[in-house]
Every structure is written in C-alpha cells, then in structure tokens.
Image (cartoon, helix red, strand yellow):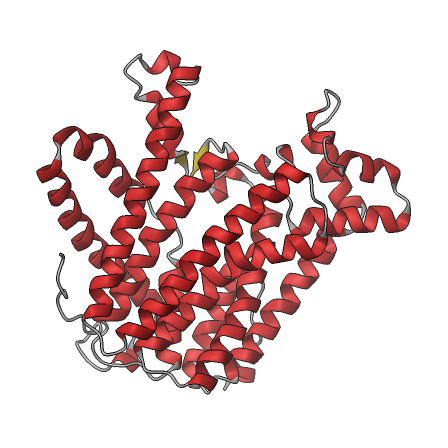
Length: 383
C-alpha cells in the first residue's frame, strides 16, 4: 500500500482558496510520480520481465501526458464545494483519474485499431513492435495477437493501480464512502459506454439518441460530471451543490465529446496527437455522424446518405474525403459546432447554481473553453 502520502499545500503553503486548476494539474504530476515510483518498485519485486516490458511501459504512457482535464475538473468540484487547505486527497483522486484514463485509452485503441496516441504509437502497436520475432514482423498475425494481448493486460494494470490509489485515498478520508460510491458508478458507466460504442458499430446503428447515450456514458459522465462530483465529495458537498455540479458536468462533458468528434473528423493529427480519420474509416457512431444521416435523409441528399450508410465504408469506392464532404454539405458540422457552444453555455449556468464563488466560476469557464474549444462568457458576467 502506498499510504496516505504527504500533505500538499499551495504554492505558498497557504489557504487552498488561493490555488488554481493549473496549479493542481501541475501538482498532480508530482503525485503521479510518487505513485508510479512505488508501483514500479512493487512490479520489480514481482518479476523483472513483467516490470521491464509492461509496468515500465504503462508508467511511460501515463507520463507521456494528456490534458489532465479530469484532475482539473475534480479540483474545480472541490473548490466549488468550499474545499480549502490540505489538497492531498483531491490530488491523489486526480492521479487515480489519470491512471484510469490510461486504462481507457489503451483499451480504446485496441478496440478501435488506432495506431497513434499522444503523439506516439498506441500501446498495442508498441508491444507488437517488441515481439520476439522482430520489429520487421510487427504487424503480422503472431505479433499483432501478442500486441493486442499485452495491451489488454497493460490496461488492466493501469486500472488496478487506479483502483488501489482511489481505495487508499478513500480509506484515509472522512468522505471515503461517498468518494468510493462515485468512483464505482463512474467505472461502470465507462464500461457501459464502451460496450454501447462497439455494439453500435457492430450493428451499423445511425440513431441520434443512441449516439448521444454513448457520448454521455463514455465521455460526458467520465470526463467532467463524475470528476466534479468526486472533488465535491471530498469537500463534504451537500446534495443541491452536488446535483448542480453533476448537471454542469454532463453539459460540459457532452460539449467536450462533440468537439472530440469534430477533431476526429477534421482535426490535424500533428496537433491532436491521434489520427484524424479513424472514426470515419470505421464508421463509428458519433452524434456528428448521426446528425449528418438525419439531415441527409430529411433533405433527400442521396449521395450523402449513401456514403454515410452502414457498410459503405467497406466498399472499394469509399473514401474518408467523401464522408468529410457529406458532413460539411449536410450542415452536420455546423449544427454540432453550434450545439457544442450551447452546451458549454448551459454548463456555466448550472455551475453558477452550485453557489461556487466568482473566482471558481471563472476557472470553470476557462476549463470548459479548454475542453470544448468555445470561448466562455466575458469575465464580468461571472462576477
């Protein structure tokens, strides 16, 4: 067991009210290093090959970065509910969220067959390249099977580390039971969302309501709503405050997912660190795709309906460029961009209902802009 860890004070060792989400996302890196060092020592004590090949690689993947948005939202939830002083528990909760995110990304890349993540090879690709048969066979059947199997285990290891850390934190907190309840609910929602995702892809679904259900379960709850609630739990938030934060989180999280869908179709891989066409090549059911199908059918745009239809992506004449053109021509891209902005604005209104102080509301607005890619309202409206 890692233990409760050191007390974490602010930049000047003072009141938590002086701290900000950028400070928290920086401070969580220190906590992650402490956790990873302890886990790697444990792994080396278990087996040297496992430690070198897998545990070290999982730790390197976690250290490779990401936006640390879940940490920032957990911090914001803690501050919104009046959290101040010793920041240890909320930072350790943030570190657990980052480890859980590593699990989700590793497994998601396996399921989607994605080759790139965080500006480098996806973990199953990296494992395949290390296959004993040699890197020249990295994508043949034996190496591919090895890479997939090893990546599944790597994701499981990241999940075990996340669960261990959250459990240790809960055991040391007076709010531990509530914290663990939120964590359990979030893990189940995440798996449910992943399953609905692969189920929709296998069935060739195009339903807009189904796409939104997947987006809420797989991303909105897990990325924003639950992290806000986890932070609020640690501050002892009452029910109205927690519910307001949940509502804000669902809206902000859905805005985040809609933006991610847009980046998945139109983004620059050199900026996003992941491919810009995986979702289109596999015809993943996203709200963006579902809106385009609905608009194509409503306007009688048979060309767009045809290129977006189930099975179209397997035809020899299918191209990602034709799908992108259909998303543009039907107006789906513009509609989703407008919906993203509306959701971000609604998230800010719900957050204000939590009773958070003005400086925390401004901080949440900045986080929503970072997550959803839309500018928050002017600061004077949040005072």
